[in-house]
Image 1: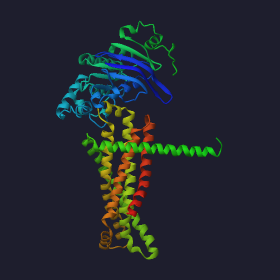
Image 2 (image 1 turned 180 degrees about the vertical axis):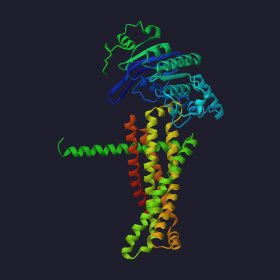
Image 3 (image 1 turned 30 degrees about the vertical axis):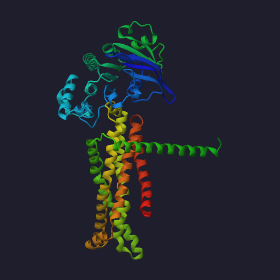
Image 4 (image 1 turned 60 degrees about the horizontal axis):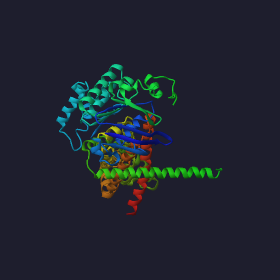
Length: 248
Length: 261
């Protein structure tokens, strides 16, 4: 479904992606792991067209993403941003129903609100939250609202950027379960980036490790622990010594 | 590089950098105008921007105008009395306020209030990935954030200038009748009899241009904000400074054009 080939991206002299090759089949949950600053978010943003790659290609269903009609293309995606990226000036339900209230598939306001409340319930939030503003919510609640917004229009492809960062372990567990349920129930293709190994084990079908601007290792989550790749071993066990330099 | 060529190199670098910035702002303005004429148009955002930029700027513009009108009356009286021309106070206050001080000082106050808040708001949205979120939700940030604000400022500013004109003249009137010994009826008849439509109209045209500049600078620097609190702070400062300088520069150019016409 998503095929990334020899993707390069530099910011001035900093070459972040140096030839990334990755294939994510339809309906699969791919988790990308890697240290901070290795370009995981940049990779997702390249797929969405938020960052323009310097070289390489990205295809979704065989179509080059630079040659598709942007609005229709983006309508197939949902994205949970690391900090939630909720719109401060809009209430919670208006955030969740943002796409439903605009564009060619626009719903009447009352219907969009109903869908938003249903999605909020889906992520474990009460209907009373709907009329609150993002600033009135805790970090975990904001993350769940972001998740509700990502799934509101029932996208085919969902990206999760650090879905559990900054959450307590229980809330992280709740979010992991929710993501897994949503991906399974909706049959969506998912790409998640995270440092959180419990999240990897809960969400992933397959895991890819990004290091040095390339995919260092990729394989089913069940094979991750058994791999002999020293980079993966150092990362998943959180060792300070190994081939990955602690000071980067 | 020696002591002679180094300053020249710095000067050249500064000129090139300024030209590049001008080019980027011009492209941004062009893109804004393109998006303005292409659907969709976000009415709710536009009306909200009209409230924020126009209605809520009334107090600051009004107070600026009324105090300026009063001070202007005193200064013109002081200057006029040197060649026995104290009686021209109502006419010069009206002319000064409507053609020059009303639009320019009003716009500078709006620049301080609005360009800063737009740059800070959009800059924060950029830093917190809200702009990226808009894009992923199939909403063009230029259409959703920039077009409503720029249009609202361009349409609101002439109205703010008109209100400022009235209050500025009123400030002069209060000082004229209470401090300078003018009779109320003489002051008003001298003002209304002297003013021509174009005196007010040219100020309102200036207001529209200044409104466009204020919102454009706020949006441009917000959209190009650097990372973190420092980035947003820098964007806010740049928006206010560049809007203020561009208001004063374009005021001179517009005045030259009106003067030549």
